[in-house]
Image (cartoon, rainbow, N blue to C red; front, side):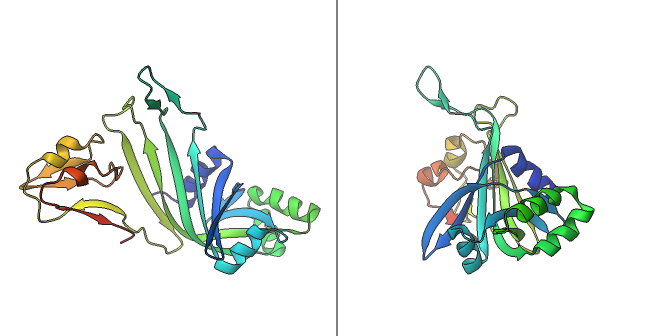
Length: 225
């Protein structure tokens, strides 16, 4: 299971991240970055004069995502896109504002917080937020299977008491073990288990290929179970 330090490292390797919030039922995004982590959560800064700050205060929630490496998609001789092996990562959860006094206390034990203190002292309208309870996943892709015999490895994580909801597709008891789903799965995420087939969620892209070929409608779509 990934810990907060592992999660931070994945985000930090990307650098600039997309932060998503809601403002009057309208999705909003902007580019920012995380600057620190500890056992309590992940930390980022903004100004109290920005719309971002008000959205964070109103909802007390944020969603963060990014992709590594930041490589433009190229195309092969057949015109198909090529993505070099890499990963995406996302985290969604609850945030709380951290006072300058709290930040100074953390800086005494952790140098990562020192820059945050200096920034706020230089720019008094700046403040800090902590993502203290969240869930998410690392979507590690190798679509050309250059380094392993399958395209995808998904690793879920959670911290601060949050749980990892399941979203995806799965095969129900209506399966007749015909094997159509396995044959149509280019991600190699489906295997046979006794008299039925099973989808491995860690390898599944939820592309829908199995769903569209199943003759008995034995594959169900699950959202945040």
